[in-house]
Length: 301
Image (cartoon, rainbow, N blue to C red):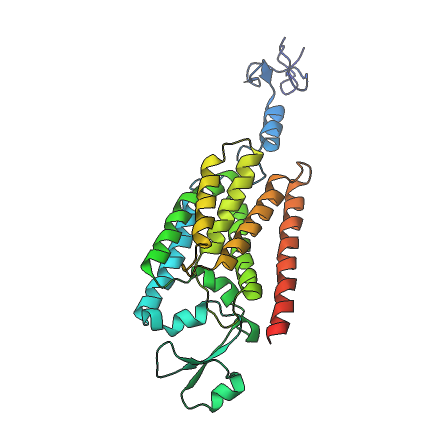
């Protein structure tokens, strides 16, 4: 036979994939026999070396995303400390308050509970703090980056440090961030519906609970041992509902539910058209949360 690339060279070797004759210069060693250059190139194109089990792309440094999230939280915390700590107006602006309220401009942590925005303007000491229902929609996400107490941010960032890279290794960066922000938003939605409209909620705990929920689903789907995860989840739920802690069970439960659902959407999507199915599922989650927010905002407004 003559080599298909070099007709002047005789050969007794054929490509294991396409069967074309190849000479010594064209043959490339494969796991079995030899392949021609075209088949090797085609195989490299069709083989996705960096694809993770659930369609995500493997990242070189799975800690980078988590470090950026931690950095944002720490930067906001430092800014709040520099502007007054517990009395910081920046914290009031970024933390989630479902409905706006009238604060006292001269007395720390004092406010006028019955004063609406119009009445607040007529009070000499009044200072209106906007809530999500009267326009401060950014609070729905910024609250997940807002902390005041050092123990609060320390516990949340330590949890994020251990959970974030682990989930990103399994899902890839884009899907990890989708779980994180959907869980943070779901925690805010639960606060909007089930918390005191005039109470303020802050912290990344909703997003953290979402990561735990997604890890439970993905680990279960892959046949992993979830006993340690379930122990930490049940322990944190017990702390959440322990009387007198002042912890927002609404934010925690909202984030946990979103993490479980988004984890299931990603892990159980069929292999065929997996990315499209995952995208549609996550967008559907976002649409449901937006609809719930719209209804609640109309009620509070």
